[in-house]
Image (cartoon, rainbow, N blue to C red; front, side, top):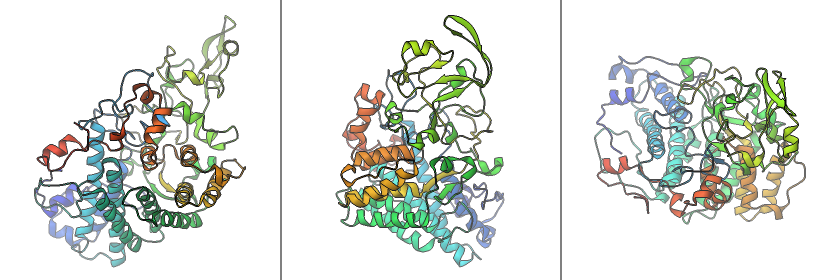
Length: 549
């Protein structure tokens, strides 16, 4: 990557100390006219440097980039549970893996965003001792938080791209001679940062939304779990991952029901221990949490519907039929995650038995039966019925349509198009103990302890109303991945889960209708292409991944 020749004050300003993020402890402060002497003599400068890391991490997780719909592009689309929201025709690079190359915008922005977070973290770490008057405890914790974010960004980079350049200090001179470190070296650095972050961060947050030791433990458990699959993984990686997950579980009790977990009135609960915050004011909110727009189709084009604020505008990807079929009838996570019934906002005209009828507002307008209705059943009702095999077929209104996702709904937020500020104010939950149960289960399975894995799976399923105990003989990677889909869709990176477990190709080609149709997903796609821009700007000192042009 090509960097400019920054002076310290230029770096301080470029690192976004002008605008900050989270409403509970980060406040905007205009330092546009600050001098280097004043910046280094003001202890608040350090707070602003740390705040800028949070802001970059938060904003790159939720915002739209001009000319390309980047929402969650390299997280869930192109997997077994999420596909593109179109008919099963044509091609797509990210979802279908057709002509996926180094000029793809999503990989460029993803690479850029992660290194932007890393640059902000390096800035805070390298200048911590230069800024006068910072309380030692504040400095220690802030540096630990910076190392946590740097580790998380390198984890995302190494899993998506393989070995990447390790930039561990503030860049002060122009350079183009960056080279890719080995994947093993990147993992070594990630775990070094996390070890130090665990020692430096606070056990209890000084303000809600700040990184604590439990966030560090959780990320470390996932990193160790992932490294355990690698050729350079250590024998103890799986058992250490399980131990860290157990620590999280012991400290963060599951809330009683999945519905209470996803309720907008219960965002900050015992289970959640790290979230990105947005707040109720435009200054603190930034782009806004956009998750309430996930997995939705243009419902408002159907009779009886208006562009209201309950369902929102979709961000194009939609869950696959496989995802909806994962839920048993008594799995409470289904009702808490999506609705099969969409209610009319206004009266609309329809026919029933060939006779015109007026369907009043508040009645059913669209229905997605779990089991396909017969033509006679459909003809006997005045509303739209969409059977499971019709989710990705043109119906004369929309090209694709699935049960309406509601897990992240935020009633009251104004209707927005994807390229407009989303203005969502909900906390974006990044880490909770529900995932720790699933990390522990997978780690125990890989450590040849399926009995312990079954215990964890039984616990997380019991919260969802599935009370039959899981047996050791039932525990497989596919069983765990199915549970992760039901529990965590929209919250964690599904692509990385499938890659880690060696299931990306198998499960995507089996369950993603668009990827299956094109059948282009190959071994090379277990790594993304390095952005061509980065290769060119380093005079090709950064080498491309195998088999990409």
